[in-house]
Length: 175
Image (tube, rainbow, N blue to C red; front, side):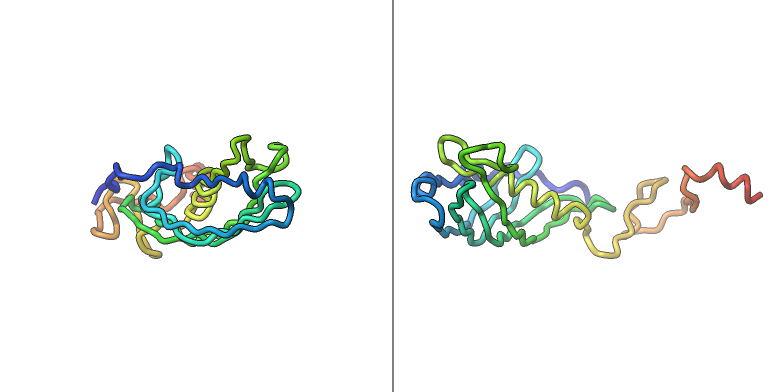
């Protein structure tokens, strides 16, 4: 198999923006609950999610809006070892403060138009969640470093050096 097919049809990332002007005006302690059921959405230039689903709670604090919830997202990518296509369902626990009115108070902030944008937060959380877990199967054998054969599908006849090449110079001491 080759690389995963690129998704060309997706909804605009505007669906991940929530107008929170009513919460900002309501004062501290105000709550709003919402839920997402979004089909394929391009979160950033380097990340498209197959879906985003789940409830979110928005709480007004003195420092901004606290966003909490568990979102289920679908991620399609390549196996880190053999490069075969992989689809994963991931549950992301979100608990992040979107600062308002001082944008320097937190990593994420609410701009003057009062539209809280979840896309940057989702991108960060998905990249963290998939950092070392995009494997086609837990015991994926990967690719041969010599001939690039997928070792899950075939065996190759390459003589793979079992010594890390960075340590090859130390072999002289053993001889």
